[in-house]
Image (cartoon, rainbow, N blue to C red):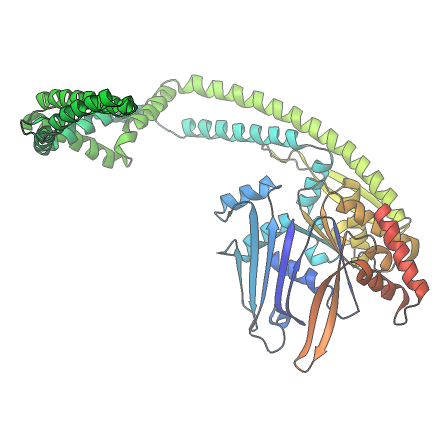
Length: 557
């Protein structure tokens, strides 16, 4: 969900920052004030094309940034992690467009390509109303929306699992079948295993060998250190720790005899004396076992040298030699039983393909039912949105893939006819921006915003409509806003009144030029803006009352 948008030196905008909340936020203002510049900024932050003309006159560059909360979208978090662009639960997009036409982009402060920004932007924002930026025109998004509408998450996850298993089996079959002369490979593997088995050690054995080597290599220093420590702990000197503690224990016992309140001190000192005595015994045992053994040291160094030589030969760490031997042993067993292994893998593959075909058939049937239901819901909404006679249909076609596909066995295309008598055509070929925006609204409302895109933007949704239809459009947008964050640029008060929040864009002229400002409206200021939209320049008491009534009606809907 979009949290904030910052725009500097874009077209007639000098510098604005706007916070956006959940629900439906409407954007209004006089014609030419720059209402659609917010949409343009989001398009550019989604990887849209830019040229030098978007930079404010007299400025070197335009700067855009947006903050998103993506905590509710684990798929986006996974994508950012895969691209090494993650930064907690948030996401920041930034783009700079220079006056000569070049641009740079960042995601969470890291430089990215426009391609990466476009991929991420398509998952963050869905813009309705302009062909070149309408995500719902993409067939992949249409299929994703249909699957979300029908709640196919688990079926698709099962398909992805089966496709992964199929790829694994396919690779194993290819690996076994790739050896023209398995006997030659078997001979090579036997030679490698003989060498590895004679030298390689299990991780725990290697750790013990390295520990013994460190002890023998440092035996001289260890002996010296033990002698110094023994002298500090238990020398004949009256200043050794054991002698001092013995005296301290005696003094503390006498003190406790005079005042029982010091008994705890005496007990602690006695405990310390016992621990020191035990440490002296342990140190003596260690010293007795410690000995210089140059022959054993040389033997271990030779063994470690052979291990490191073998590790370099096989291009892997010493600690992984044993695991590497196990891998080679597995390959040797597979080759020795290549015929039987291929037969077993073939049976596994055939069983998997049968399960995949059954799952695809069930998914395809469910998609057809969901497509019919979605079509009926959208068609009912089109009439309410001022497109009486318009038709919508979900067309499914088989992919005829010869290999398993994680998306199933079909793709879908949204078909529409905006006017009675016109044939159904792909949604991406609908010409009118207003019609396209309203069709997109009908689809999203019918699906209740069930796709994962958190922010939907509607521009030109109210083009060519008014009256009761405009009020219905506003109600549908408000309903959609109950499930998703929605931004709507509008010039109709019937739509504006339905917003959970209201942003007003205005254009100010000064000696330095023209600039745009954005305000959050509430209370009387919002009522006055609706009255302006209703009544023009001269605002009557009746117009204000009408605006007040529209706002009250919207909060009750």
